[in-house]
Image 1 (tube, rainbow, N blue to C red):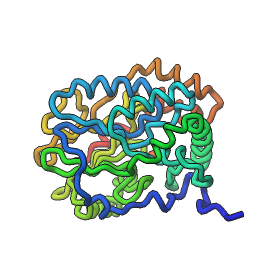
Image 2: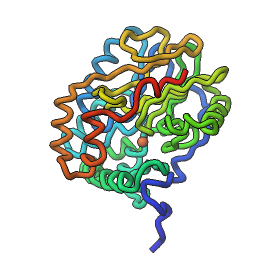
Image 3: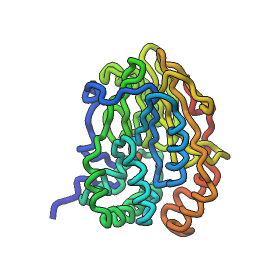
Image 4: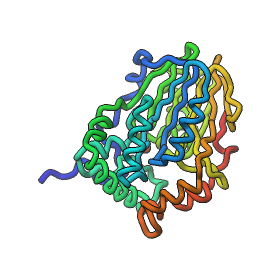
Length: 312
Ligand SMILES: [Fe+2]
C-alpha cells in the first residue's frame, strides 16, 4: 500500500492545486460592467437566495461568480441540490471543498492547506466534515462531475481593467497568501504585490481564508477577499459578504476603494439569519463537528472588525 502523499490531511496543499501567478496572465473570458464575486457560501441556501435577489437588481451588464466553497454545511441532500441548482445559474470556480468532494482520492482531508495558526482540533473536524459532505456528493454523481469540471480560476475584464478571480491566492487554489493574517506582514505584502505584474491584473478577488480583507497596493492594484458570503464576517453581525467590482458604486457597500475607473466594494448579504441557524442545526446539532467549529461564529460573528479589514 502506498503512503499517503498528504502527510497531514487538511494541512498540506495538494500539488494539483498549484497553477502559479503566470497562468493568470491568460486572456479574460468574462467581460461585464458589474462583477459580483461570492466565495464561501458554505451551503447557506438563505444567503444564496438573498445574494441572487441583490444581484438581480443590478442594472446593465452584470455577472455573478461563485469562487469556490459554495458547498460545506449542506450535507442534507435537498439542500445540497438547492445549492447546486442556484450556483449552476451563474459562473463558478471550484474551491478546495468542491475539488475534494468530487474526487475519490483520500488523504488530502478538506484540502484547506490550513496554516499553523489554525488548531489541530479544527483541522480534524474539517476533515470529518468533508467526509460527511463527500457521502452526500456520492448520491449526486451528476453534481460531482459538474464540480470536477469547473475551472480553478477565471479572468474577467471590467472597465478595461483585468480581474483575476481565484479561490486561494495567486499561486494555489488553497493558498493563504491573500489571507488577512499573511497580508498583515511586510513579507506577505511584498509577495502579494509581485503577483499583480505576473498575472497582469489590477484586481485579485479571492476568498478561502474565511475573513475579509481589502488590501490596496499603490501603483499595483487591490486584493479583495470577501471572507464568507454565507457566514458572518465581523463581530456582532449576522450578514455574509460579497465583493462587487463595478463602474458605479453600490448604495449598500460597507466599504470600498477605487482602482482606476472601478469601485471595489464589500456588499453585505443580509440573509434570514434565524432561518439559516435552524437549517444549520438540523444538519449539525450540538456535539457535531461543524457545530463545534462554527456555531459561535454563526451566532456571534468572528472576533474581527471592519477597521481591521480595510487596508486602503
Ligand atoms: Fe477554501
